Amino acid sequence: MQRLEWRPDHYTFPFILKACGELPSFRRGASVYAVVCADGFESNVFVCNVVVAMYGRCGALDDARQMFEELSERRIGDVVSWNSIVAAYVQSGDSRMALEMSKRMTNDVRLHPDVVSLINVLPACASVGAS
Image (cartoon, rainbow, N blue to C red; front, side, top):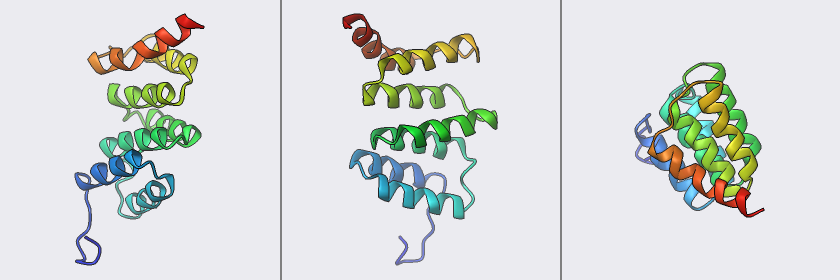
């Protein structure tokens, strides 16, 4: 795309970032996120949710949490944002934090969990129950 001088947009970036998370390649994902910011898409909730997920898949939980907190501060986060951070903690093996974030979503923020929320939190419940 860059060689053809085509610019990615808020539809394209999530697919590129998801691919970086699937590799996982933190370095490439961070480079793509730099382009996201340079192109002015850093406040797009869909793009940011994929950044949270990508960082989580790459094991960069501090970066995932920072991005998530920025979404929350700007009040543009939604249940998808919460699902992304919970999934990041579950994938990294931090079940207690995943459950804490899930609890925060429902009690503090008063968002209603969806099917994805439940699918994300079940492995954490099983892990904590097995401990």
